[in-house]
Image 1 (cartoon, helix red, strand yellow):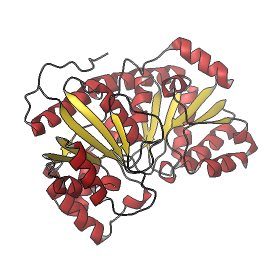
Image 2 (image 1 turned 135 degrees about the horizontal axis):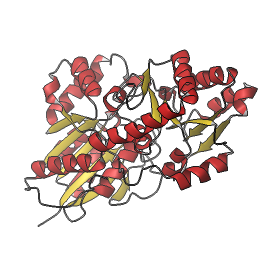
Image 3 (image 1 turned 90 degrees about the horizontal axis):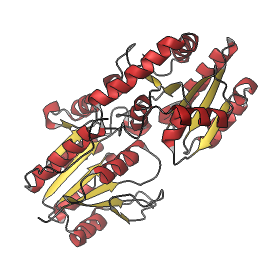
Image 4 (image 1 turned 45 degrees about the horizontal axis):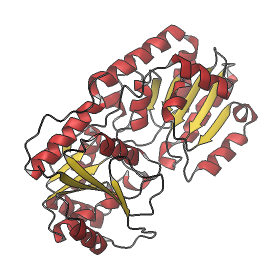
Length: 380
C-alpha cells in the first residue's frame, strides 16, 4: 500500500512548543504508513528532524508566500498539507491552488500579538482559510473557545487533539537527579525551581523572578533554573543581575538538547505564561514527577487538577506564586505526593500514544485509508 504523504508546514524549526510537538509527531508516526515532509517558511535551524525530510523556503521577511508554497506542493504532490498557527495559514490557499487532496490546519497557542481582539482583515482571512480547510482543530478547549468567539463560528467547527508526552522517556530517575543537582550545586534541602521555554515576553519570566525574590527574602533555600533561549535572554539576564540575592541563586543554561535530564534537577516546574496553548514542557515536567505551578491560562487548567496534580495562579501574580513556592518548600511530603499525582495525571490523559492514535486516525480518514494495526507508543 502506498504511504500517505503528509507535509507539515511550520514557520520555523527552532525553539518552541509547536516545533517540539511536530518533531515528536513525525518521529512517532509509523514510517510504514506515512511519508512526511516538514516545510519551514523561515531558515530552519535546530537540526534535521527524525522521521521526515526538511524543506526550507528561507523566508526572512513578511512577504506573501502563497505562490511559493503552491509551487512546492505541486512538486511534492502530498496527500495532506497540515499548517499550524497564524504564521503558516497561507499554506491553506496554497494547497488548494496546488490541488492537494486534503488540508488540515491546527492552532497550538498564541503570542502577545494574537492574544486580544484581532484586526478585522485578519479575522476575515482566517475565517476564509478555515472554510477552505478540510479539518481545523486546536490543542486545548480554551483555544477552541477563543477562536470560535473571535470569528463568531460554532465551537463544533473545531476538533480537539491534545499534546502528548512519552512517559517512558520522561520519568523520574533518582540517579540522573543526583547527578544534575550536583552539577548545579544544589544541596539536598534546596528547593530547585525551574522553567523550560523559549525566552519570549509571553512567558513572563519577570513574574517568576519577583516570586523567587520574595521567597528568598523569607530565608528559604531556593535555586532558580532557566532553561531555553530566545530574544529576551539578554534582557532577562540583566534583570536577574540587578538583584544580587537572585543573581547568586540563578542559572541560565541556554538551549539544551537533554531537557529530560535538566527536568530531573527540579523540585518545582514554574510556568508563569500570560498565554499558553498546551505546553509540551509542562507535560514533560509532570511526566518526570516534578510538581507544576502554572498560570490559570490556556490549556494549563485542562492539564493540572488544582491542588491534586499541581498548583495554579493568576497571570502576573508574583505574590501568589511565591506563596505556592514557600508552601512547597516547607512541606516535602506534600510536594512529593503532588509530583507522584502529576505523573499519574499525564499517564492517564496525555500519554503520547493517545496523540499519535488521534493523528493517525485523522490522516487516514482524510486520505481514505482504513486504519491498520500499526504500533504506536504504549502506555508506560
